Length: 56
Image (cartoon, rainbow, N blue to C red; front, side, top):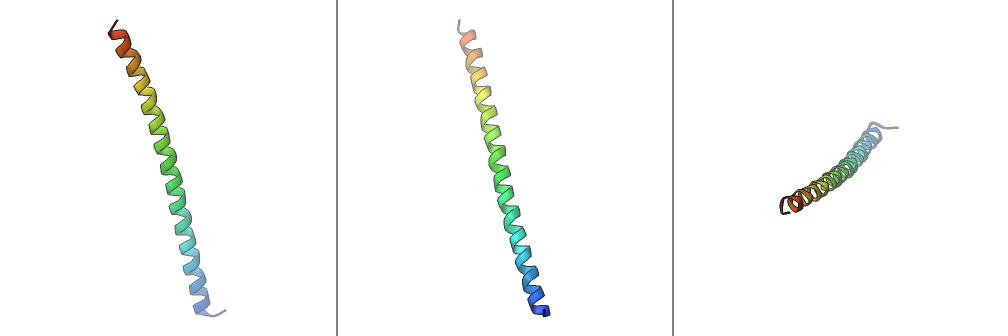
Protein backbone atom coordinates (compact mmCIF):
# COMPACT_ATOMS: atom_id res chain seq x y z
CA UNK A 1 0.00 0.00 0.00
CA UNK A 2 1.43 3.34 -1.02
CA UNK A 3 1.69 6.45 1.12
CA UNK A 4 -0.91 8.16 -1.08
CA UNK A 5 -3.39 5.35 -0.47
CA UNK A 6 -2.79 5.51 3.27
CA UNK A 7 -3.27 9.28 3.25
CA UNK A 8 -6.51 8.90 1.30
CA UNK A 9 -7.78 6.28 3.74
CA UNK A 10 -6.90 8.48 6.71
CA UNK A 11 -8.56 11.51 5.13
CA UNK A 12 -11.70 9.48 4.45
CA UNK A 13 -11.72 8.10 7.99
CA UNK A 14 -11.40 11.62 9.40
CA UNK A 15 -14.27 12.85 7.22
CA UNK A 16 -16.43 9.91 8.28
CA UNK A 17 -15.73 10.65 11.94
CA UNK A 18 -16.56 14.33 11.45
CA UNK A 19 -19.86 13.43 9.81
CA UNK A 20 -20.73 11.02 12.63
CA UNK A 21 -19.86 13.65 15.24
CA UNK A 22 -22.01 16.29 13.50
CA UNK A 23 -24.90 13.84 13.33
CA UNK A 24 -24.55 13.03 17.04
CA UNK A 25 -24.42 16.71 17.93
CA UNK A 26 -27.61 17.34 15.95
CA UNK A 27 -29.35 14.43 17.67
CA UNK A 28 -28.23 15.59 21.11
CA UNK A 29 -29.30 19.16 20.35
CA UNK A 30 -32.73 18.00 19.20
CA UNK A 31 -33.15 15.89 22.34
CA UNK A 32 -32.09 18.79 24.55
CA UNK A 33 -34.50 21.16 22.79
CA UNK A 34 -37.33 18.65 23.21
CA UNK A 35 -36.62 18.43 26.94
CA UNK A 36 -36.58 22.21 27.24
CA UNK A 37 -39.89 22.43 25.38
CA UNK A 38 -41.46 19.83 27.67
CA UNK A 39 -40.21 21.70 30.73
CA UNK A 40 -41.60 24.98 29.36
CA UNK A 41 -44.99 23.36 28.77
CA UNK A 42 -45.03 22.09 32.36
CA UNK A 43 -44.18 25.57 33.63
CA UNK A 44 -46.96 27.08 31.52
CA UNK A 45 -49.47 24.60 32.98
CA UNK A 46 -48.36 25.49 36.50
CA UNK A 47 -48.64 29.18 35.71
CA UNK A 48 -52.15 28.68 34.31
CA UNK A 49 -53.17 26.88 37.51
CA UNK A 50 -51.70 29.65 39.68
CA UNK A 51 -53.43 32.34 37.59
CA UNK A 52 -56.74 30.48 37.78
CA UNK A 53 -56.46 30.20 41.58
CA UNK A 54 -55.52 33.87 41.86
CA UNK A 55 -58.60 34.98 39.93
CA UNK A 56 -61.00 33.16 42.28
